[in-house]
Image 1 (spheres, one colour):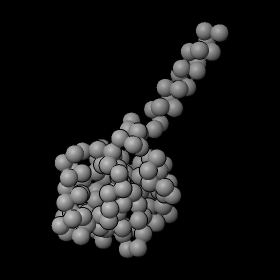
Image 2: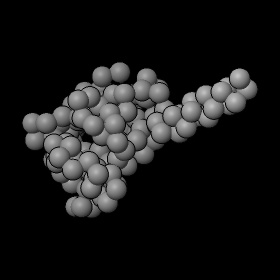
Image 3: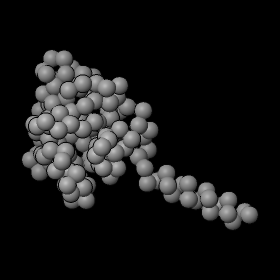
Image 4: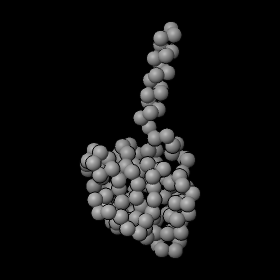
Amino acid sequence: MKFLSVLGLGFVLALGACTDPVAPDDGALFRVDVSGESFTVSILDEAVTREAERRIQEEDGVGIVIGTLARGDGGFNMPWSWHILPNTVQVADISIEVCDGRPSMVEADVDYWVDTVKQFCPWGGSLVERMR
């Protein structure tokens, strides 16, 4: 019986290690539009959240959302099978070209984007709204 308890605990710990350490409701959620497609990003950093809000109000959302990609929707980026890790999100005016694209491009080859490119930074993106 003790063995099964230890085995069960090990399974639970291993399962927890496979997910993001952030609950989906921990961050501010923003919708980002990229050439008619949209995705949702969760932002944990208060300064980045304020910058995203400022961009929406003062610059019509203009700004490149940048962050590290991970598999799964993260609990907030449905219907996509990927998300940007909330603790890596930044908003910038410029970025490198290799991570530029549309959400559907990431979806079409998630393994390549997550394992090789590692980041997403859609140049044509705009922060559209704060959802939460």
